[in-house]
Image 1 (cartoon, helix red, strand yellow):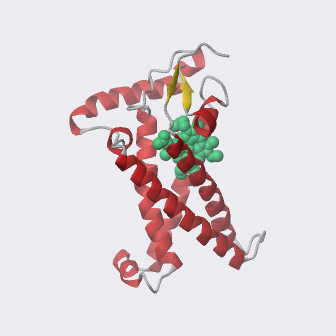
Image 2 (image 1 turned 180 degrees about the horizontal axis):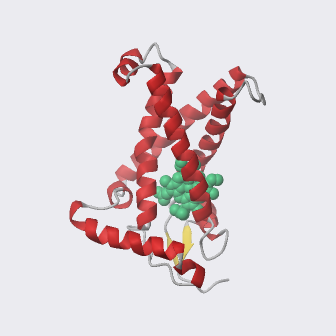
Length: 211
Ligand code: HEM
């Protein structure tokens, strides 16, 4: 048993949201790839991939609404997910540089993480920026997904955005953003005091250890 200080950062609703979201993303990406590259490889038929994409798409929407309701009800959405208020941008940028230097160099020579997570400020500046965009882009990804799901019903919206090709392009570009995010996110998820400690905290306990 380690003697490190522990802090409760991930309440159960956030943990449930996170893992349902991660499973949805996995299946949405795999089924999306199958639909797009059906001429290159066919693990399941196009129709089954489409059905899977719709099931996990609607699950993701319901889960996103739960996230939005929970974070608005607890009043934490602005304090955690908005990188900096107008008067705090200077300090935020300084902290951002410090945090980047830590990941680029300090971590390798055993320095202490400059960010001390607390429930009301649990994200470091890099997490704040990336999680901000991950969640701000989510409604855009959902809306473009809905337009592709039922183009006739959403035809006015589609025309407003410049046609179905434009909508599809936004959907695919955001997918590429999410793919890049997930690769980087997985790497950072292993940078806790031990390889699995962040993942264990997010999955099982909710408690992060200081490091
Ligand atoms: C198997 C895949 C994944 C693993 C292992 C993983 C791991 C983690 C861990 C350990 C944390 C808490 C510590 C930290 O912030 O670094 C976290 C938080 C978070 N992850 Fe993931 N993640 C995965 C997939 C995803 C996906 C697909 C998304 C969104 C597209 C995502 C978005 C987030 C967000 C927004 C948070 C902050 C949640 C909060 O505390 O409000 N993660 N993840």
